[in-house]
Amino acid sequence: MNIMDFNVKKLAADAGTFLSRAVQFTEEKLGQAEKTELDAHLENLLSKAECTKQWTEKIMKQTEVLLQPNPNARIEEFFYEKLDRKAPSRMNNPELLGQYMIDAGNEFGPGTAYGNALIKCGETQKQIGTADRELIQTSAINFLTPLRNFIEGDYKTITKERKLLQNKRLDLDAAKTRLKKAKVAEARAAQLNTSQPEENNIMVNVSYVLNLLHVKWLKSEQEVRITQSEFDRQAEITRLLLEGISSTHAHHLRCLNDFVEAQMTYYAQCYKYMLDLQKQLGSFPSTFLSNNNQSSSAPVQSVSTPSVLASASASLPSVSNSVVTSGISELKSSSGSRKARVLYDYDAANSSELSLLADEVITVYSIPGMDSDWLMGERGNQKGKVPITYLELLN
Image: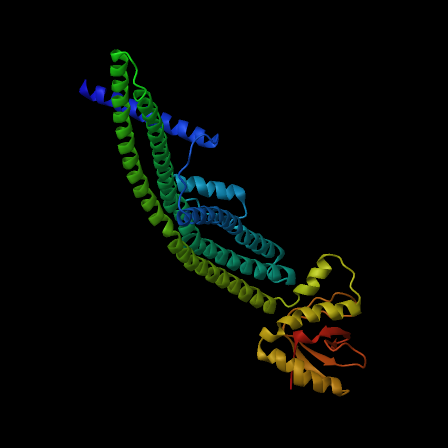
């Protein structure tokens, strides 16, 4: 019975406090009550925390979109994370594309140029898929997790303490309002008491009311002191938490460096894989054009294909550079011919060019007016233009 009585009293006290806060908040909004303002430093800290929270959420969500563009996959990962279960392992897009290419290459025949090229591309795509998986895993651990911990941990604590501070401020201002009203009522009673009424009974009543109002005034004054102390204490707690935002920024900076390093590693791996693929699949540019049924005249081809390969020639083995420099220059300045070994397969884009197979040996020579990136090649009774970046001149 005592416990129930205590619960009822506590419930009534809580209801009274809530009602007092609601009245104070409403009167502040209507401009009918004074409001205790926070100091400028605390306001700046609150603004900084709110700004940090908003931008952290945006960066975190967009990073998730970058790492996993498929919204359905993101939703699935979210549910598995909430259920504390590991999501089933599935092929990502590069791995799936690579597997399709390998299957198609085996279907067409690994011995054919197209089938072999598909298998090589598929293997490279699988390597990129593995690198992509490593990027996602590293970024999730080193970047996304710290950001999420701030939103779901530190900032929730700040929000809780900030709400408590708001309640303490409302309690303080409500107590100040009651004290102000008690002072006004006591002043009016005192003024009535000094008017010296004739009837003694009225005098007694006024004295009683005056004493009652004085007691109420003292109680209100004590309540203001208590609520002011609680407000100051809560303001200090909130300030200490908010000052930790600077440490949060420093921690997120380290996480950002880790994310950039993970991206750098990923793109460097992708570049290496594609560069190796380009070395194996030197005929990719012309094959791309012919597969899209685009008519390519000799002048256009002389600009496009060799220029694409020339951009990567600096990264190719030194033998290619020697071919492009001394050997080619000597051949172009003379009217003779040389033997050359073919480095990569090449599919002719039109009838003026000669298709090549890797490791075969052909005869090459230059004719006046020919583009600097091309030579004439002969294989038996077949001849046509060949790109110099596919050749290694033999002594």
